[in-house]
Length: 276
Image (cartoon, rainbow, N blue to C red):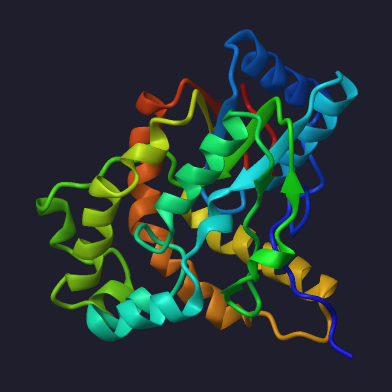
C-alpha cells in the first residue's frame, strides 16, 4: 500500500536539522518586540524556512503562545488550474513554483482569518501528486496569536521589461524563446501579490550564499521527501535540476533586492549556518 501524501503542514516536510536555539529565540524576540501578528520569513529554496518556522512555533508554544506556520507553497493553484494556464497562455505555466502559480485571494483570506483569531482551515498541498488536498482534509486552527509565514519571494517586486530580454538559463532559452512565460510571471509578480505582502508585519530574509547553491539544497530536499515516502515517486535528479530553473530568474532577482526590502537580513553559509 502506498504511503500517504507528502503535504506541507506546519513543521513537517523535508528540511535541514535545525537552527541553533539562540538564533531561533532571537527571531521570536524580534517578532514579539514589534508586536507582529504575521511575521514573514523569506529566502531562496533550501535555506531552511520551513525548519525555522517549525522551531519558532515550538518555542512560541513553550512561552505560552499559540503560533502556526504557513507557507506560500500551501497556496499553489491546483494541477487542473495550472494545466489550463499551460494550454491558454504558455506550456511552462503548468508547472508550479514561479510567481503566478499561487491562489493569492485564498492566501489573503487565510491570513486575515488567522490575524483575526478566527477558526481557520489551513490549505495543504500534496507535492508528489502535484495537487491541493480536498478542503475536508485541511487542518483547522483557532485562536492563533502569531503566524510565521514563509516563502521564497515575499515582497519581491517585478523586474523591468529590459531585464527580461535575455534568458537566464536553458529553460528560458529553449522553451520560452519569445519571453512569453517569463513576462507573464513577472506581470503576476508586479500585480497579483501586493495585497498579500501588505498583510505581512515584518520580513526576515535568510540570505544564502547564492543561487548556485540552490540546486544542491533542492536535491537534498527531494531525497528527504523520497525517503519519507518510499512507495511514491518523487523527482529524479535531472527533474530537480530542470525544476529549479523555473525559479532561477525570480530567485536571482530576489537575492539582489531583498536586503534593501527586508526588515532584517541574516546571511547563511553553505551549511545554512548564520554568519551574522
